[in-house]
Length: 263
Image (tube, rainbow, N blue to C red; front, side):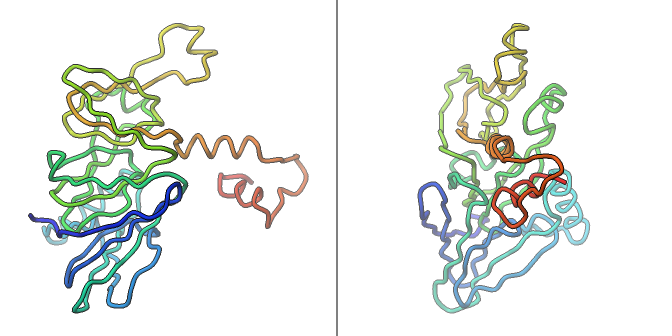
């Protein structure tokens, strides 16, 4: 294998974190801000680009950083390396309630495509790039936009999503229609497109949005029951606020209002 071989344990139910066990000199890469805890002997380093360590010099690093910039992610990633002589552990936590999905890329054709904020951590050697959708309709109207992330390699990768995660294997030609926000990830052989909701009345008053994702097999897809955008919109709608009055600075509601862009 080209990627580092790491062992892991998932802890928790709805607020999960993943504990990764590293042998001496093994490394795991993670999104900035996802660290929960690490043992003595783990060295943390911020790197420029996607952190895959694939080489390519300065140009390769700039290319990897550019891909992350396009997806709206930070230009930097963090690596965690076991510099000790025995096994050590480092843990990463989900940023919001949901599940962490461990994926062995060697068993999924070496590549998966996921929503742009789903990646949490991976074994060193996994490349985190961008996947441009072939159809303009997918880009303009898909809940995840024209660009999604792609994870390539033959090691372990960990992605996260909201609520309960459902994994479904699609037979050749089998079609699954999914709310665009509920889509999490798919293997590279799944055909993905965006379709409009049929019927003017359904589109205007159905309350389910104007578009949904159409996934055609063969392949595997992962779907989430509670997208963070849906959760945030419900919390924002329920938060009490009267124009001209204090938003409750210091309170949970006030903090959420500021987090969601309130003035």
